[in-house]
Length: 339
Image 1 (cartoon, rainbow, N blue to C red):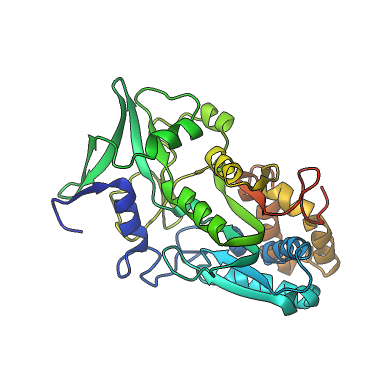
Image 2: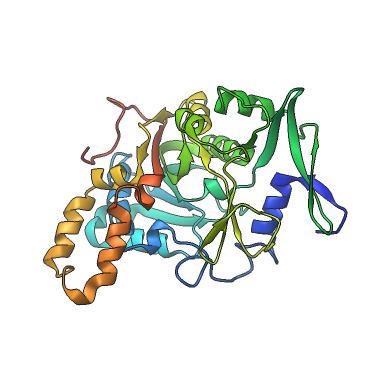
């Protein structure tokens, strides 16, 4: 990035996160866990990957029995979640494991197969996609651009993409003058690209996000953009360039309506905690207790499980969305899990 350049915030965010040499996710530094900048669910406890593996086995078992199964992880990162899921499939669902073709695909990579028969899943991918930022003014929508220099400045101008007004109408029934909103056009593009490739299967998305009613209740005049640096949360994207995470909450209203437009069937949106409980987290916890998790030396394990289960914790903040693609459904719920 050169001083004086002016770009959309989406382009600025993309460079900060995904530049091949200096991007936050590309430069090779540790970003997850205690030595990174934040935690994700796979780093709280191995039970997360184990229960997710059971859920994925349930969805995969409903597909054609005589065909290989694609298992595609979008935003696979350091690979810890994919490794845990595959280990669970191998140990507990060997029939499914024998048919699975796993691929981990990073944002911007060309690793998706041309035809998908199976499950595409992601954990905290869509909230890390580059977003356009727009402000509602008396004269209509104005886009926020970034002008590089000392200091970096924000300037407002006309919309850079004709899809932004439709995204705003779809995602935000009521606009508040003076407030900033994010338009995640990359999210829509990814769903449309998946639809072109899918023959049959499911999409499972675990991410931070909201529905329209939740957003109406928020007091976020500057939108949902947040920055994570050394386990500290702040709202200034113009510091620590390439050294901090930038995220924006997923608009699940747009996510679900886009899927419906494509002909997909949406399962009800759940908290991650309810989703994990549906797929047997409580049973797995009992197994862990029987193995001695309550012993004093296993305090760290207990804290990890608490992070997954505690009301108001990470699993209540995260949402779980399952969608069926070109599959008959009954009763609006898929798979063999327990409600």
